[in-house]
Length: 512
Image (cartoon, rainbow, N blue to C red):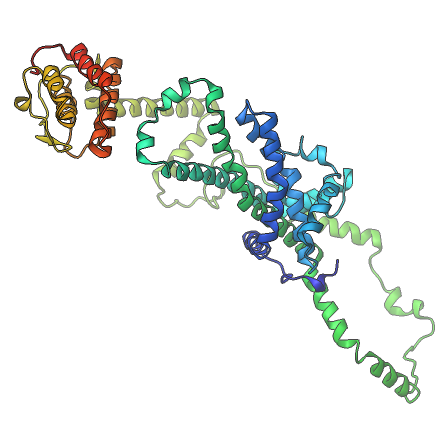
């Protein structure tokens, strides 16, 4: 490689600045990186889905496990683009199978869960090192940038999960409201798994789609960390300065050589040697130290302060206390006095004292928590109440445009609803629904608010843990919304079923 052809500024950077450079590199070649990644990975994911159709989760797991094999293609593109040799899409795809050969099995087995994967991948792919040479190279590279490479992977994992869940939420938000109301997740789980495999595969397909955006960025950040570490270790920036200096001087070098050859005959030759017997000069003979004596002197100096300060401390002390000092010391804080007192005790006695203090602190904390939250402990119910409490909360007069006061209901709700089905089905459903709201408040003690939605009412009914009431409430709510918002009336069999359901829960008699 020729550093002078680099398309980025070669200089030492901090780890986070180097990762910023990786993001910029991925943005500069984003079209090639994303397109090549999609062409390679999406067919593989489709093939895995066909082979493992009955196990959608296993498809995602296998695809995630194969990411090191896919990451070699973005690294190849970035390494070529760094020195101005950006490959075309066709050239990059041709090289992918060749890139898989070196140490693929190791990358997919014991090295798969390495947190420094993107940072160390260039050692195998670009440097071609293996065995002990690779291990020595990794030890050098990880000395300074290992922590940043691990943080890159940790942040990348969390970012992948956040993007995946975000795409799921976005998909759910685009579902029409009416369809959403008809979804019962417990019912979906209860249905045979084969009937919903297509839905799981559809949700899982969002994962390879988000990797088209994120994975090239992750590879580029690891590659830029690797470049920054090599720049620091091998002084690439200094080498570039010398190369630029050589290029500047290459044009004037012949002129300087010609000038030197022209002036050389005019220069008088003088010899400065005063004594031909240089080794016998007094300067060399008058040496008080031999090599061994100088080595011993150096070792003695290194073993003495300030290079080494051996000291054994067998008691607690603060600051520069002196045992020989007889002057009165200044009064110290309670912590200093406490440790001095402990230092005068026997070790076992001091340990027992500390243990007693810790247990006393724990017992005091438990007593304080019990006293502080005594009201909450007293409020814990012995059994779940399903009837109206003694102090009835205020009931709103109207909800969803319906009068839910008890006195506004007829004596026989089911019979009145049956009379209204033929002429006014909306009024019939409204009568059943507002009668249900009234019963929930007066008979079951459910605290209803005027601003509650139908879904919030159903959530409060779920808390009562009565399956028959919950099933009837869901069915009635669904058909009430169909009439109120979609102007769709239930068929006659369902009309009669709703009235019979009301009688089964509340009886055929009066509404109060």
